[in-house]
Each structure stands twice: as C-alpha cells, then as structure tokens.
Image (tube, rainbow, N blue to C red):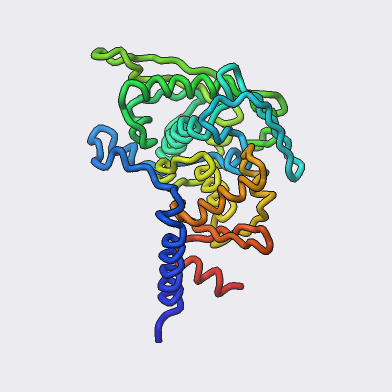
Length: 306
C-alpha cells in the first residue's frame, strides 16, 4: 500500500504545477539568480554559518518594504506591545538594509557557539557581507552599503519589547555607530567596517533570541516577499502550518498599501510559490491565508496529530 506521505507529496506536486501554470510564468515573481554559485575559498567558513535573525524584528514591522525613501513615522500596537518607528534624514531603514543586521547577528551567534567572547561592536569585511547576502561586488554596491548604514543609524525605534529579560523603554537606533576601518589599497573602496549594534539588538543576539533563515531568503527580491517569509518562519516555527486573516497579515507586514492592493500582492506571492520552506494558500471566503511547510513529512505528521 502506498504510504500517506508519498500520496501527499504526489498530490502536493500536482497542486504546485497546476498553480504555476494558472499563474502565467509564476505570477511575474522570480527568485534572484545565485550571484556567487562558486564558493569563494576565502569565505567558505562564513558560507557554512547558520543565518540568524532576531525573533522580535521578525514578529513586528520595523522596516520599510519600499526601496524609495520612506520618511513616514509608523506606529504599531498588538497584544500590549507598542512600536514606533521614526525615520532619519536618509529615510527609514529598509528590509534590504536588514541584511546587514542578519549578517552581524549571525556573526555574533556563531562566535557564541564557538565559546568566544562577544561585544556590541563587530568588525566585518564588506566583501564577505556582499557575497553572503547575494549582492554584486561592484563599486556601487559598496556605496549602497554605506547608505544602508546611514539609514540603520538614523532610524529610531521606540518600543517596550524586552530582549534578554531587559525592557528598553527609550528610543534607540538599530546600530549605534558605524565606521570604515580599512580601505582597499587598489581602489579605495571600503574593505572592513566596524558596527556597534544597539544594546536592544545585541541583547537579543546574546540571549540567542534568534531563528535560522534559509539562505534562499537573500534571493527574494521583493520587500513584501521577504517580510512574508519572515512571518512564516516566525509563526510556523516548529508547527507545520499557520492560518492568519488578511487584515492581521496586512498589519503585521508593515505594508503601506491599501488592503485591497495588499491582498492582490499576497495572491501573486501565492501563485508564484517562490518562498523558501513555505507555501501559501488563500481562502477567499474567509479572507485568510494558510502558510504551510514544503516539508511533506512534517506536514503529514501535523495532519496526523489533528
């Protein structure tokens, strides 16, 4: 007799194929190419790290989903948690700027796992950061890193979310400072950078209040796609599935689109089916989105328990 997981895998494959056909070229959403498919010998260890993201910024909408300068103050409240995000002169930090924080947090957690002493100040190689986050390594991308540092420094978060048992009640930047500590002798580009993380973010890393991300995350081009993946990773966790109403998903995403436009955008993500690890299904009648794992075995085990 055919095993239940084999049946489910076969059935799921048919759903995905028919969904992609009906979407017409995947709904127009594509994964970015893997820009560094050949491993660089000098950063092989870094590419073996587990990528880590702090659970709190995955839960709450701290970042702009737009690549255009965003100067609007945002306020978010849910379940007694209050968050206010105030952009600096260079605009609000974006979800692509967050790649810097993911890289820095991964660096700190890896050091902890090796039994090393860590501090809020971390020194990183710009080239390694670009390669790990699937970015080009041309000159303009070093300039864009500097722009990201400015937005991360300028954006002020006011929240009562506790990290590592400490509740921060005053406003703080995502990073306290940044500086270029070494330039390339051949072209004058930044070679090494030094970042000092906010105490709030450092506390989260030090307490390992983090979750592991799939490296394919960096191949997601759209801001909403990245944010939806974060929410799936945060809320599915060890569960195989998570159901959420469209209005609540809209709020948690931090999207500034009208609800109807947000709904249409989520439908495109459903049809494209490019998110790592998770698949989405939209229930029009209930106006809800079901997130569920692409791991057929886990899904079968979850269904067997219900």
